[in-house]
Image (cartoon, rainbow over all chains, first blue to last red; front, top):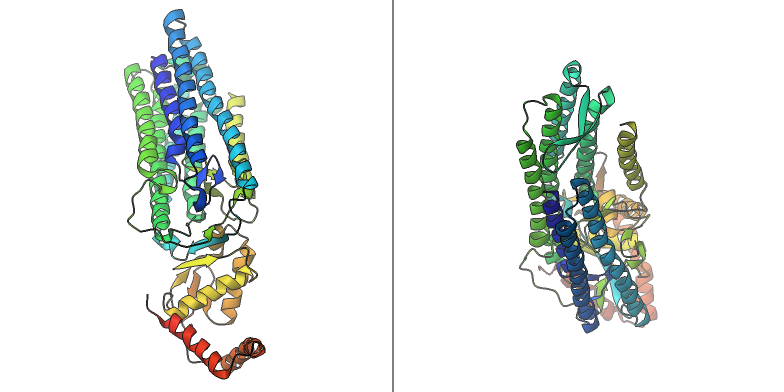
Length: 368
Length: 128
């Protein structure tokens, strides 16, 4: 069973990584800003195609090795999990190396051939952007937190009735396979982690409101519509994640409180549906919306502006991956290579929230 | 309404911001009472320092083009479009003076200058 889950995850992972350059907006390739004049550079097209081919090839090799290993050796569940994780990491590291190689090559071409020389850089702001932004209200994210909080309080009131051994890990077949001694802390650790996760999603939704809109100078109306849609869909995706996480964690919390009444098949079913809903929403998000909403069709023609390009902000993107800009008050910014968001490492709040998140996870893990 | 900034230009960025907002009011794309983004979101959209936006907003506030209402937001001043007072007139004259002087240095005749002014007014009043 866990082998199948790993195979599905691996295939999902490899496909997303391999076809990533095709999902991204044309103006950014391998983390480098490409001015309009060089969008159709044949070297660039070749680079993207080669990336897809190589990642697919490596992915297939990893997949075959994993499936072959499982079929031939027939290892135990524990070992499958270990192999599966190793395969996942392998399928992650290879494309990263390839990305780095391409990023450096592209950045060098751009610098040596002076792609942006002689062009006027312009930054566009839409004064009414926030008024038109339709994000889900923070209430939608606070209510699930109240539910988790309520369940945790309920769990604590039932403390005396709980068994001495509490499950902390559930195997892929839905059966609890790891336990811990009952204590006030171990009873609250699951809801605590859920609250941290829910808090993070709430924070994302709030930070997105403040995040700067990147409107392209050559197609202002179209990129504005796409940015608005991208943010709206992101807000909905965050909501779906919050709800599914709340339900799954809430269910697991209930199995701790009432170990006899919950059957393993229900646990299995809820875990699988959790996975399907999350992967499905992410896939929908990637295919329907795309990076910065570039896959959303908007019928606004491009404007022909000679000699004017968007501002080249490569210097704020370390390695094309990490955004560091002390002046920008945005905490979250849209990713360059990938669909989604990253944080502004030049902002104090980003570091504090990152530390809080890691700190609270480490706190729970060490105390268990 | 879109605002376009050229970060490499010799005109300071805060002035570019302020001038384009005033132009928006003149053209009618920004009406008295319309709201403007908060300093933080404006700076985020620009990817620039909040001081830049603050400076532009203070410049506009001084000229009574915008109104900053604490905790409510930033709005185009109710008196953004108004009859010029004596002091408004005096200020404009002072600001125009160096430009007219430059035009005279460039040997533009009075007619040339008047024509230039007419062209600019026509462009600003053009309904798009």
